Length: 352
Image (cartoon, rainbow, N blue to C red; front, side, top):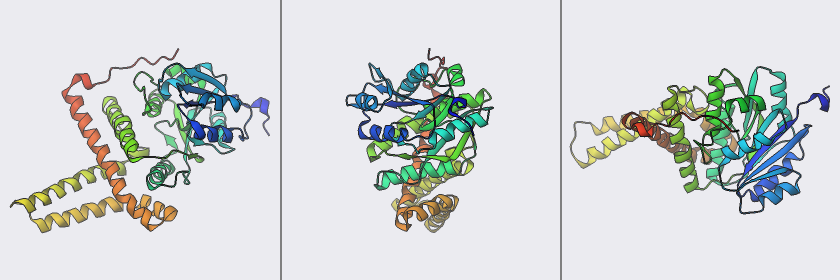
């Protein structure tokens, strides 16, 4: 039986901007952690609410940034001041379980050649609305069906050795001044330098975020799909894991084909074309069937979790996800090839 003295100090780093009640729940859950020893470091990213006071009242070490700098910069700031040899990053809208810190720390302690480990959202998101349920369940499904040997990193609930984190320069706060794919990019650098990353599917946390349609589209397209597409194009390789597995790439291509066939059908109704409308309708049905069959595991999962109506409603939203992801990639590829100024210059990773 290991004792507290044998365990490494863990620094839990939480970036927050106007966290409110979600931050309260996050910190209250951390106080129930079974792991010892650990410290909680909250980096207040220029909040205008009581985030700092909420954190201080719950015993956290609090640092305040004078101007809003984004979660990448906030995490880096916290990492520089953390005392632990293991850094655990937790988002301020996430509720951990009592064994979350224990599981992450144990994974690194038991696997000396592993530099980082992360978990996933659980299958019972807090917000009851359809969009929030779908988004979080989809995220859960992606992580639960991915390889244990991960190719990227996730900072919603993830741990990394502090010496490795500092050696690589932390998150690229210059490139990602807003919440984006800074954790994915860090994971790619970890893998590029030969470090192992593990996905622990049993380390699950609850996501409290309530998604709104406008904020979802803005976040997913401007701060995820487009930056992710640029990163893939610039790196010259596509990790075959998480939401970039072969089935996901084919799904994106199928959405494009479905849209194209629909346009041809509309054109056929407007004027005579060389395309046969019955043949186009048949092709459309085949493409839709292929899309559903290819993603049947997700729909069965949603059916079991939330029922038939929820699963059926999810299909067009899932289709739309692949549509804007595919369009983002194509547009970024064209811009990257056509305009040199679109290419991101190599950032010098340094957080000291």
